[in-house]
Image 1: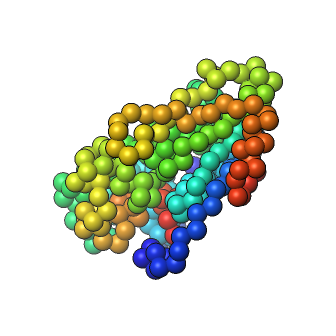
Image 2 (image 1 turned 60 degrees about the vertical axis):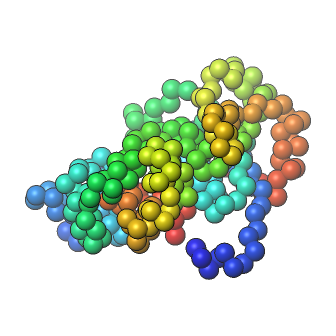
Image 3 (image 1 turned 90 degrees about the horizontal axis):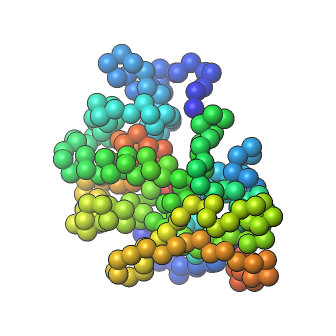
Length: 142
Length: 120
């Protein structure tokens, strides 16, 4: 820890893009692991959800019957890791008959002292999503 | 998860005759297998005595994991404890005094959690 403090800290903007349903493959859990590692190393981490990836954020998930870990509870911890932006593509929601109300409520604390919570989920349209991708240094797709 | 392989004696804690499997670093394989008695035993292998202060941290970790299914690394642990137990305890100097070899690593191990993500 202390050794790395000598070198100037390079912080990059990482975007982890989730495109797959939460269950049936290991992608969602692996992506989450990568996200938490990126955040633990003090990088500027954001997430994007498109295509079937939007299902990762839906309410009421329980994977017990298929013997997998339920993915969704960990999203609630992202704020503690300093991950405060979860971009969700509006078209992907609409194409699957989902609305914002079908998604979990995920929040993070206000920066700097003031108490209160801010929603982390930001629904954006496709055009804005491509801008979001362009704004990041590193885009990793799962 | 259940494994087909029979637990290897070298990879288990012995809790009153019951074999509780752990990984090569001593973290429990099954979070649900944890009991306070087991915590005492793991603490002993870490050369730590469980006093009230250490129990507070271990309990806070267990309840955090129960909600989020995530084992927090040190920076996150500090933030979470500051919120739940107050700033005097959500403080890395304080936590290093309790768990000298790394608060997140040692306290997670004693709490029966996996090794914190991003902890190398």
